[in-house]
Image (cartoon, rainbow, N blue to C red):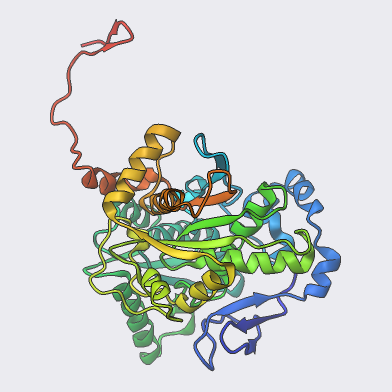
Length: 420
């Protein structure tokens, strides 16, 4: 496992030490990336060692199979990563990366697992996060595993599973009448008030918001390493990624850069086109992409049952839009009605219960197929970022489905009558 060489601002390239916890660049408030000594990594990090390492040590299973390109720390792990790559039954080139198989049922386990790992390494005792739902559940779980206090702020209409997770894991849960942007403001106000009150440093909350600390990206980059390894160390033609905060898309792009420097993909390989998928009721990236803007505007009156996509202005919007341009991809939005139809389609024809966010990606895939921009044989990796079962209340409501008030006392099943 490599030592961190420095932290680098993505905007102004200012470098900081990783010896102490860092949030944003002190010069321009840009997000920080973890950087390693790549010359040293070229000598010590070999892709052929990954499988052997995972087979030899339970600590190197999941995303920690990539420990040779992750910080040199003792992991706080619940078994995150190495999720299934499911080949579509209908489209020969399409693969679904099933991130619902992660601990707490979503891709958030990767980023928060590494963020909490580093928080324990630094001796932090209180972590806070604004969340559209799944990040809160993941932070609560990993903090419980690490013995750290979690303070989570969520909109009051998130899926009930997200609220239940926070309570079960013993987190300090605040439900907010508003959006994730309101939750972020409240986290910031609390931290400011703590500092102004001269709260002991060990008791001041540390903000692990999306892209406001460097290690959630580092955990999410394992998505890129993993999909490339699962495809035989080759790139797909395209990656479809549901984009709220967009850290997974950003992390994958960082992974591609590192793999190319390390020689883990064939020299000259073309990176995949990156597609950012959103809901029409909250589509700041799509609007900025369509208008050829370098950053997004705050999306007014954001509303969608795809809770993880209800992010009115992603902090990393400029990074996301830059990746779309460089990769030749695009941003697309689908209505809630189309997203629900895609959930039903994939459940009934592929046996996969997509999250609404994942269905935003399948809906966009269908749209591009119909337009002739993609062929069924194009190799595409599509991310289902969370387990559909975490959204049972939201999906049932969208379907106008209610629990039956009375169940029959007997029912024929395969010719057998159940006991009365």
